[in-house]
Length: 269
Image 1 (cartoon, rainbow, N blue to C red):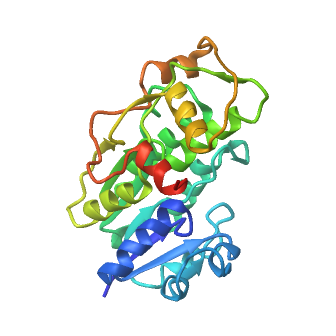
Image 2: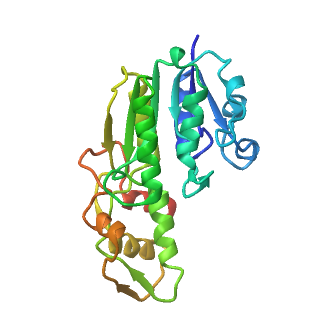
């Protein structure tokens, strides 16, 4: 029986997807360039997930041939190295090029790629790299589906936490974010997997759009902290694009929890 391959399978999204596959008894393999991600006893991955792990480092073009000796016909390409460069190019572009150049294209029936909402409108170097990855996949001749998601709850929280590190919190209050539950995005990928290739791109986002001040206020509240916050004007093309809502979308993931529900789960009273 042909198998499903998940690149970057030990990442946040890959783990959520693996849990779905294990529950559904889906035949799959996960790959990662870092073995520590899979053998760490505290990482929450169960023994079934660990037995499905294979080494593959797309950044160095290592381990690819061995992986594709496993009768792969479907790929979920989740591997990413945000904000890193390889040979003067965005790392994600190199990862995608190496994957496309090495796989037996004639055997692949469906390539599913996870991308980000707004990469075509927000002038951010990392996003330009993701957009190039999309272009490479579309030009590869492999049947594909591209899912652009808004930011995961954890990413939005990490950004807010960075703002709160300073004695006075300066918040670009009109920046708009639409946090989505990572498990909801994994469910959407699993749904795509059961369909024919779309050969197109579509978007999915969280249930509600927030301004950054709302995010920071709510985080302070659940952490029972007080801090002076000063709203700052939006400067620069990238932040202005976020303020215009280019990082949000209309297609809502109905099975996602809200930002408030995420906080209530992580910071129980």
